[in-house]
Amino acid sequence: MGSGHMPIGRRERAKEDKRERIMTAARELFVEHGVRRVTTQQVARRADVAIGTLYLYASTKAELLIMVQNEKFAAAVDSGLAAANAAVGQGALEPVIALIRPVVECVREHIENGRAYLRELVFGDPAEPYRQAGLTLAGRLEDGITGLLTRDEDIGAADAATLARVITAIIHISTTATVCLHRSDEAVLADIRDQIHATLAPHIRAA
Image (cartoon, rainbow, N blue to C red; front, top):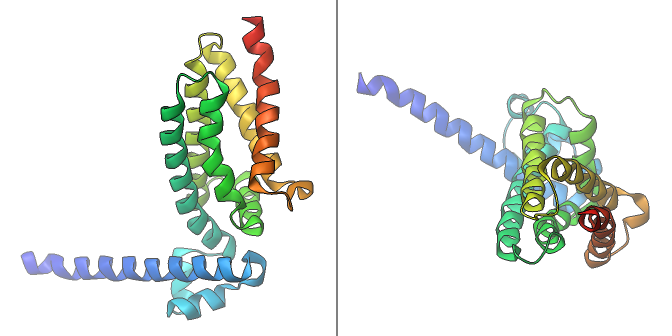
């Protein structure tokens, strides 16, 4: 009976190996050329798999991009949450900025790819598994902002959730707008900081 399980294990290992090769190939090519100039055939060739095999893992180039960017986005959210926890006690603004800094840097690491990724998450099919995973990550970010805001005694839970949605919208526009493409990360973050400060200030003053 034990030997009956071994072929399944080998198949799973082979599948995981192919997935990792596809991910690595896509990651490298998107960085080297940008998503617009990469084809699925190029990814398959570099990963050393047949194009049909690649389509078993991602049926479109957009799905390949989301696969790759989800890993980076997840790491950025984790890093931001850790930084935000270290900044708790410095008011409402500073922990939020600590949380979103690595996220902004992640999206802008390769601006073309970051813009395409956010566009696919917002306008793509939300039932597609990789988009679902990306939207879950976006939810983690929004929930993280909500949690930080509710630690401030001046901001109620309902307002915190609404403000978190506003802040994520600010991040989205500020990291993808054409007028911001050639600005530095620090300049974009400074602008985001000003917008968030203006968003939070009336709520804190009202309390």
